Length: 384
Ligand code: NDP
Image: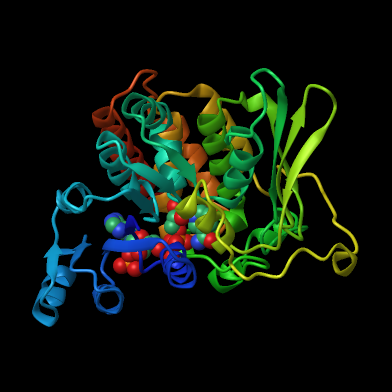
């Protein structure tokens, strides 16, 4: 049995991971965590006979303690305690936002293999995270579907010889506003932005998909995971979300990873690696699909991709600043405190305002994240 810690088990990825655990064999959840959704977390723990959970929000942790007799950790060190005390073989980090970075660092520092859904860890602290994995020998298995696809195409044991990969292509569904002009995006609502055409996801990543910031974060994630230069990573809109990623090789061939959009596939791949579990999903039917279509990104209507690539190329703390400003702006949009187009405007203003440090430590990142959040909040406050 593989002993598994699931961080963010109450979220979209966390719940789907528990479905994978239930429908396949060999995985034993030993610890779970959430932010404040204590009732769902306790229900999950009881169903799985897990005796140790962590809840970030102290009042929610208190409620869980009074309702349940298992161990409830809370406070700043709780995730570190949960991870290091679990005797785990694998940690799934499905926390949303830069709040997931600390758990990534603790897991890799302990030399524990990490299934990483929390893309923000690699955006904010990419070089340090990759160095940490290399130093401790812990394996980093991406859960994002595009990066799982790339991992399977180039980084697994059957991967490509060094020097043969010329380009990576990430596909993007285009989100709910594909085809709209910038002026048509001025008055879109939160409900419209949350209505993703192909994926059912948590609120933050759904808004990121609507602005294309999700794809932008994924470009940085791919750069960090596979060491590919930004000028060799392409993004193409592919509304059917059947091709997840493609690799172009030196001999003119291209390899693509295909499948119906279902996050359980990359989750199961990461949790069961190097085995492949049978998920009972129907195979791809090309005749039924008929045609796959592709379009360029409209960078004027969706400026987040351009902003993220510029931040990625600048390096240092710039991606951390970009990510923090995005998190603040997305939260404001979800609370209806700003418009959809204020999201990229806030990110651009914050990037222009915060001084980027080229070399960084985890402490520097925490400072850069804090400063960027404060600047982004000031910018948003000035809009009203
Ligand atoms: P959700 O918002 O659905 O879930 C987030 C989880 O993290 C919840 O369990 C939440 O707890 C917990 N959480 C939130 N804030 C904190 C915090 N400050 N400290 C500790 N735990 C916290 O997110 P998703 O599942 O959609 O996404 C999770 C990650 O996976 C993101 O990084 C996302 O980009 C990535 N991802 C998601 C995909 C998807 O299909 N959803 C696809 C590919 C990547 P609570 O329930 O109490 O709020």
